[in-house]
View 1 (tube, one colour):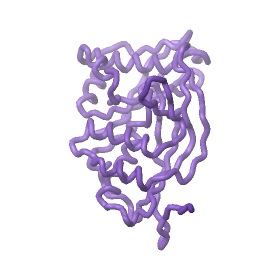
View 2 (view 1 turned 180 degrees about the horizontal axis):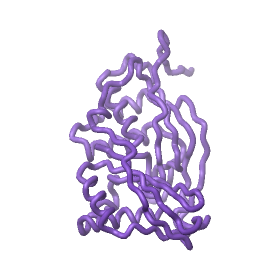
View 3 (view 1 turned 90 degrees about the vertical axis):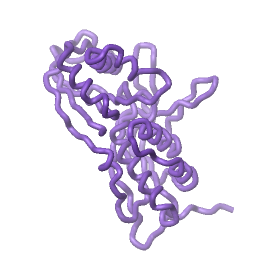
View 4 (view 1 turned 120 degrees about the vertical axis):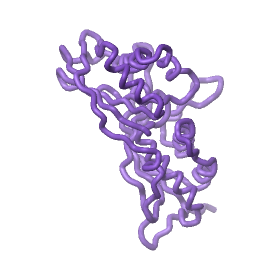
Length: 269
């Protein structure tokens, strides 16, 4: 059951602009897991696998800050909560020091809730990319895709879902996305974020809408699974570096085709 936990932090002074919060938050969360079970943090951060934990950016206001941790794997929830109370809850952010003051559950969703039926006339989704979002392509060179791509997005969500949910999402969903899903609206930009003093991350932020072409012709069970992945995206995030605050994804709404109107692909000569 994916859960989102919020941490309230008291700061002894405002966080310097050049403080790199992302690696600090990641190290603290992995440390909490190690305090609960030796080596657990290393397992969670194993290279080459989707992360079962997503961490938001640190949001600061003078002497207070908040951040959120989303846990996707059921077996990690208890160790994380246990580790939090076992360990020192200090954050060292440049010249500032933060102390975790309060921990609260802000949202959760059972797998059954995520798999609830799509709305009548379901035809796509509207998302907000709340922090820079990008995907990395395989190959001899380091290449990133920063603009929204429905195939990359849904492939990533499906991979994470199938790792932690006992009811897998079929590959037929990816076939539908390749054949029928398009970017129908986009209002965003590319932003650069310094994750460390040696690493500049570029990703897309803004709003994007994906539409299914002629959804009335698609297999209902496939649309149902696709809708489940859209709900899941709000927990798992999108793309790479989700443990460093990137890829934070918000579900604005599940799109519904207008009554009597069936979205169609444009034909070109």
